[in-house]
Amino acid sequence: MSLNFLNMGSGSPFIRFSVEDNEWTRSSVDGELLPIEWTSPVIIDIEKIQQGWLKLAGGRDWKPWPDNDPTSVERPSMEHKQGFAVKFFSTKLFDDEPVRELSSSGAGMIEFIKALYKAAEPGFGEGKVPVVKMLPAVKVRIGKGPSKIPQFEIVKWINVPDELLEDSSSKTETPAATEAAAAADDDSFDDEI
Image (cartoon, rainbow, N blue to C red):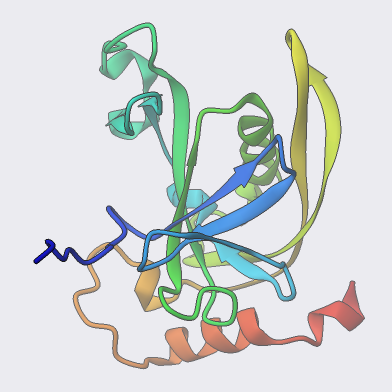
């Protein structure tokens, strides 16, 4: 008789962007990467971005910087690069796990996050998050090689969904969660953009 193990994904639900394939994917319960088609906007909690030291070779090793201060944590190794982690939310695109983390240390992804942060920064501190329409990536040359930078457009701001609140211990339907789900699932943004 053979051993039977469940094939379970490890860690938190995530999304990633492959520069080589120019493709967004998301994790699944069975461990497979599933493609993401940006058919509707997504909520990105860019104000709560966490920066830190990230090593992906040989397994993910993440050392966040308290208060996003790079001098607060010594670089663990030369393999660790400056990176980030940020939460995305969509009930339509990520139906099985609507909150997903994007984490990367790639040069193109860092440029994407810096541009999104700069565009969203004037709205920080209001208890709202941007609803973002994801656009195709553009090819660029960064340093010694080619890369791709995902493009975006902020289509509106909404109240932070409960699912994105760190201290939220329950996932009950509240006005903020209902508004967030409706905003992320609202196809009428396509007409406005």
